[in-house]
Amino acid sequence: WVLYFDCLVDKKAWTDGIKQIDEAFKMLPTSDHQRLWEYKVLFLSATGRKAEDELDMLSSYDEETQAKVWAGVAVQATSKLEGMKAYRKAIDVLVNNTAMRVDLMIDFADWMYANGQPVSDAEDLLVSTLDILLETDAESSGDNMDCESLATPQPLGVTEFCFIVRVCVMLSRMSGSSVERTDYLLTAQHYALRMLIDPLAEAMRTMPASSVEGRAAIPESLEEWANFKFTDKLVARLRERKGTFEISLESVGRPERILHYIDYLCSGLESSSMHLQSLPVCQLGVLIAKIVAKDDSLASVYHLRLASLADALFLKSAAIMHEELAGSLELSVEEIRRGREEVKRQESLKELLSDDEPSSGVIDVSKPLRPYALRDYW
Image 1: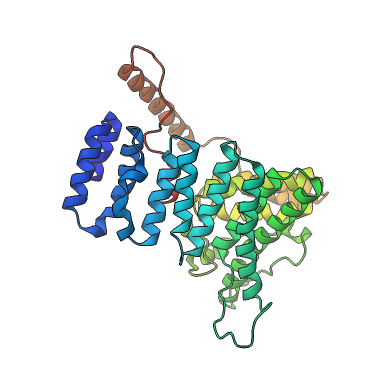
Image 2: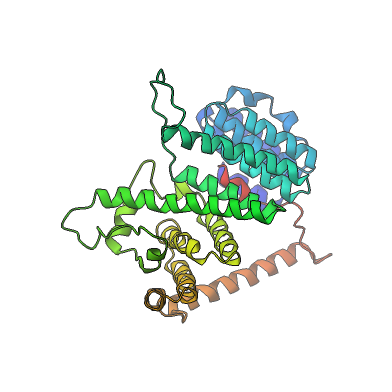
């Protein structure tokens, strides 16, 4: 069914898609329906029909599935009002899943900011999201704990640290005050540092005592992060870690998204002459590039950035070390081959699209075939 729907999407057979998706819902068991909702929302929105009018049966599903469907409706909405209503429904149905609720609140604020809604509304939503996350952090650290409380709050993990970094970076971009902007950047830097230190401390605690190389001490000052190096043993141990401080695709999400916020955070700190504070943030970029993105070339970019920061701070030995860790900057034979294949693929795609629409010669991009944003939810 999924392959068949992909073919219908490629052919832009939206009406046929609506008919066939209804048949698929009748024939397949309920446990398989979750993968079909993305296509249903896409087909409905592509034909100009209001998706919310067709989702009466959605209430019989669990709240996570309902939220994902409404988030998909919001992404595909043809009007701002429909998108706003869908986002609100997606957030409202989530009662027991705080992490997903927070994620959708951040996306909703980003959507409002990008679609010309009042900046104050987006800021208020982000501040509410930040309050939820920081309240959890305060409870887990022992603040404001009642003696009668028997339940031990779970400490913040990598996923929550990512949320806080995203929220604070977004607030710094929206803020019109230089003081508030700096405060948000420093808050984001603080939790990016925790996102780096907590998994490192957990991994080093479980490494064998004989592994001297892997048990290198965690830097105690910001300056020491300039000379810190992730060894192969340490990276391997971090990759094996599971649980609250797990660094993986499941806990971090799409690496290019969090790395975008890390890049902006580094640039913001540097522009405020806080080069020392940027050092551990760039080290976090190296770690995500190695473990989540699994891209050594991307890790080399952050090593070069660390070399630049070390040079600006007159830390010559650290600058030399990161230049060596970055390796050769010349393209390898494999990278050249992949680049040529990508160019050929793009050229063939252009020819295919131009053959499909010879009259205008213009590709309609008003409705993407497979919105990448939906993949964040499914």
